[in-house]
Image (cartoon, rainbow, N blue to C red):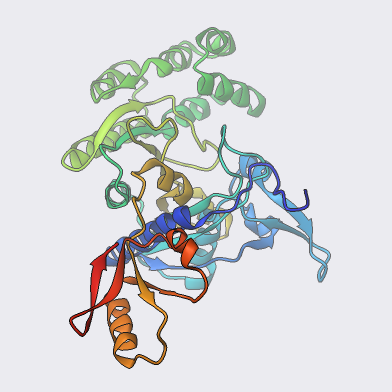
Length: 384
């Protein structure tokens, strides 16, 4: 059994690999025409650089090993986004707005869900240097265009804002241990535990924390939040941002719900967070949000917002390809007219496979739906 792969690690076979590669090209081309420049970070880095500003969750996902040259600990990346933030902060060193995109494999120590691979193929886009809601709207619009380009039907968004919970915690001067307990209860939307943990806090904070898990639904929850949450400037600003997203994205994206208790990436994100879903698919197809504090961790504060998706997951969620559209050509290397015809077809983007001698019985494995045949003295493409 030496040929067996580790659990949740698998090969990508030709048909799926073809779908994934088409998606990769289509999405990177889409990002390019929107002004996003491609970067290719390395697969591994020194661990302290790789995990800077990312919080505890990413540390647990990261494979670690010792560098034979330096003796220092290296990490195999579990997320490309922090690497792109490092590139923006220290290599490009631009003062204005920078748009970057990427695509590459990442590795996770554990799968993120049932039947999920530990080697996602992550593609994404990031905007650096702009701190206002307009860049969040641009990145969310691009994400929805990417899903449409991939062939996802009727995608929708769930949107949250980590600043609401964070503002309540900081205003009440909650200690680190108690904050962690409140965070876990909020993530689980465990109302009894949340009430018990909030009991020592002041009445305004206690009431706000208790109502936060109920602020889940369409844009009407934003009006309710303005009525029931404290009028702290950070909370008012967060609600204004969510209202702007609701208005600006309406023509191109359906927002299924706003969830003010959504704290995904709480130790990493700093503002709006969002997830994209498709009907009939249980897991999010794309995730994103604002993460202004990562650049600060690299020693150069830069506001940032972006999204990422797993191409392997995305390929599984869209319609499967049918028969491979390829042309079978006879083996005749000395026929110059045939060879020129083959090259002309390939130049137009057609797949042409030469039928090597001795394998007539296995031609069906090539997956061709047409063939080159001599018709009235000329090489023509005909059906099989």
